[in-house]
Length: 355
Image 1 (cartoon, rainbow, N blue to C red):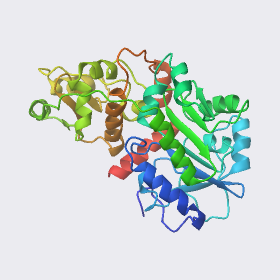
Image 2: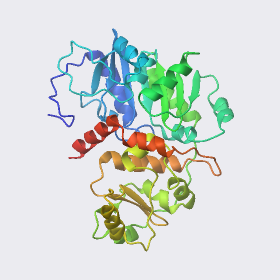
Image 3: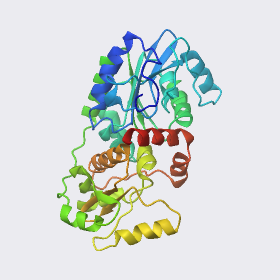
Image 4: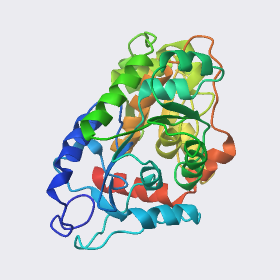
């Protein structure tokens, strides 16, 4: 049994997926492109769409069988009917994995290979207002479009269908979300991702190192610990980063794994009291908090996915240009993500993996 909960030999995956596995593993190992179980990849062959399973980590694509066969025509018909459930293709043995939340996106794109990543430079641009002219200049020569934010899954696929029906696009900048590309081959998709990120590169702000002594003192006797990655502490040690990170949530995976925005605790605050107050209100204590001037702390029982999202937030926020106007996700969109069954499933996969 592997961490997905199925026998490894139940689903027979064909050899032509080897290129997809290798490309997915390379992309998934790059923290600037993919964090935890975020992102997904696919290839189309003989009216079957092979797409990454929900909750799988692309970085493990060479070690784990994680691609689910989906009926391509059936998936497109489901999308046209407003149905998020994607039909599994037969003939490949028992399939116990659930296809990616964003399978409909992959079915919709006409390209043989589709790759979706949460690239930190792209996310930073995708959360900004009034940058259309700058994006046009930087992405000149590419077949690209910028789309407004929609919840992942059917709502996002519907807006992609609406915009791409007018003209073919190889590159989609998804508002407050990430980057989606289509190409003829796995190598071409990977190269296109790299080219877009090169053009959208933003220099990160520097931040003082975290005060680990202060963080350990604050966490002492509680179920929290200092964040493991030094980059997370810059969210609290740089005042501008702190202000940006505590005003709201910028993209879906932040909400799903960390909750809306990031709460903070003064350096002289009582963490145990904060946790007791949350429990008295029948509210789960925050997954992570920022201590201004000191750094970030995270619950000891936080999943690997949650810690990866904290790292991602540090990378994204540091790249938001000074004085930029940001679009945060509205409260109703945050609640839609938190109450979405598909995301609950992905979180269950994260817990199983951590266990």
